[in-house]
Length: 171
Length: 384
Image 1 (cartoon, chains in turn green, yellow):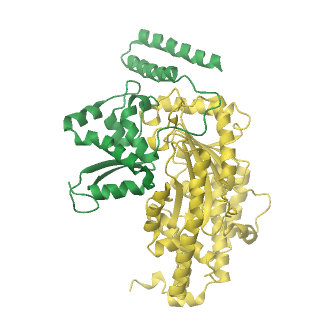
Image 2: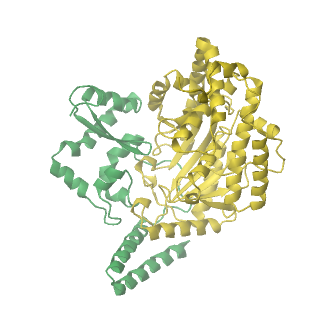
Image 3: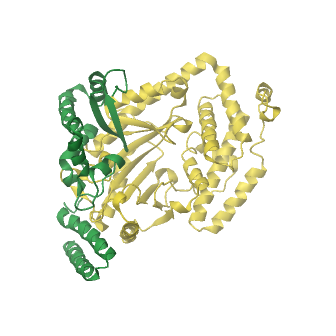
């Protein structure tokens, strides 16, 4: 593959998020360096090159490895990494945990950071586990309803209600 | 950055802050079933209704607004300085009519605060890319005030709903590009001279170095030369610093645009004047009721030139008056759309009559720069 900016061989394959769009770039080492360095001041350059090698790894590996990463599916919402790469949108909050390692290079590339600073919810941090559980249970309930297994569905519904009432009791 | 705050002017149109929020116990929109979307909408609406401030909102379903209506809503952005101060005088509008307060929304439902002038308008969009997006618009660049306002509203929503938030990644959003603060700070700028002199891409590229991005406002090709300058990163930088990042850029952009305008005038003042007058003439001949996609782009291009021409003092007084009448008409139509959406038919009928009066007054005809007509053969005069 040729570099998109010059005629040299493209060896860097970068997935960038510009604003809300996912952008796939195929660049030669020189152009890639230039591209990544415009993203930030030079003091961040070592970090970026480090990130780059991490981020590029999957793409430089065999097609099988890539396929494996793409096939990874979030147990909560069911979205695959391939679907995320295609659409640029995650399926549920838990994806940030489930695809955590796979997303990190991307986050660093876009934000230059991977630790939130700034505003936090005033009520304190919520129990994400029970929230995630709710998403999973609702999905499961829908599946069993589709199979007309209403006995199972009513069990799941009660479970959901229990978690929901626990949540509101704390407030 | 202790310079005096920049007032809105012919280059800075408006500013805004948008917060992206999601409810913790639902999947993001892309994996939601229709039922779940409906449930999210219900939950959010219920949350807003439970709050004494938030319940004071008019809910508009943007699917109910057809393309034409949405266009009028978008035009609101144009009815800003430098024309705004003069429209009331020109139309002789009654004092009782408040400016309308609605923003366009691509999403499902927008709740709009109705008590403020539209420039300082707040909107909540439900089920766009994220479950909830809160937007505060300002006609000036006081983004600190916008931040205090939006943060207080955000607190109120948070009292009603549980947001998806993680200690490490902040507010969790459907797109990883918004995670962290979930905040997009932006300034809308009108940069026709940078476009005309072919420098706009170079300027935009240089912005990347300071973590700021610029995008065309009305479609990818920056229809009408409007650009939105916003922060690139949302994670690892706090809200105050994000505002600072964007504000730092604005004086530089103004300077570049001013230089480009000066250059254009020095090069060919008469040509530029004719170009602007020509845009006005063509716009007046267009049937504004017939707004398909193509003619919309044309309209925007004409409006852009005219806006620049007014700012640079290139129009004759008579033409400037016509421009004011034109924008007054656009504004009245916007208000009509809002009145109908609110089911306020008393106001709607009033607006309809005012529009009719203005149309009958012949804003299109107006006193015309006769010299210009002679210079430019009319379109009906044949193609060659």
